[in-house]
Image 1 (cartoon, rainbow, N blue to C red):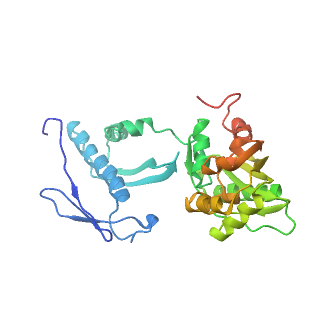
Image 2: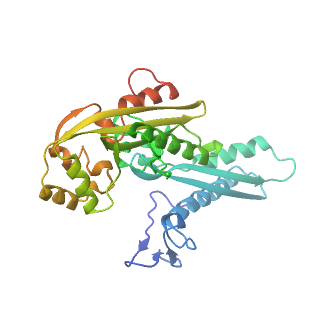
Length: 331
């Protein structure tokens, strides 16, 4: 073996569309593309499959070297490697690498030594500094909202993002608080039902709606819808209801946070300019309390984090007993 350090150089290039060719000196060029999970073709090597393949290859070659150094006789070694890619605290990263290996050895081989050498081969893989700092997710967040993920990070709850879709139609005569409670519980139940035993961790889901005089305001579909929504909210006090639900092996629980928000009078020009920023498009009621719309808000009574989309008091009230915590959130 050559002395360390070893330097490996790979070249890649890309056009706006098509494959990404990857090459290295003396090696054939490899065509890569996004995997099917990222809307790629699914019939080429992707960065994700290459990384998981590298783990498998490294394990096999490491075992070969360890066995040779220990004069250990073996017949064959096969492995299957599974990598779990998740959205964790706002970043996409591998959170779990599982190696399933089958080692075949001659009759009479010391099985304990075989296991020991396989463990040594596994331990030869060194994680990067970023991997070593990566927190293990303790819950799954059934929402793609970056605001909810940010609020969980604020109280130190490590989580992975697993958004789900449920029917968000309003039932006849349904009150706004009952509406968000039903959706939050449905989202938590939907994600829990999709998890296999090895994936199961507490699931947290939430839903937020804006209401004025009992009328539920969803997310605006276009500029005209946003103009109508904010025009009705202008100069008036409305309600913001956010429900948070937790589902875990021991059962389920939920809470609702309700707040009042008073907006100043808004001009049509202000509403149009606000829509042009792109901020209102995915927000219930057509505004974000933590964004540019803060200049529209005259008064708030209730939970600021609840208006953002995740009431932290109620969230921690639900999570603390599930996570075995009391008092303050984890440091």
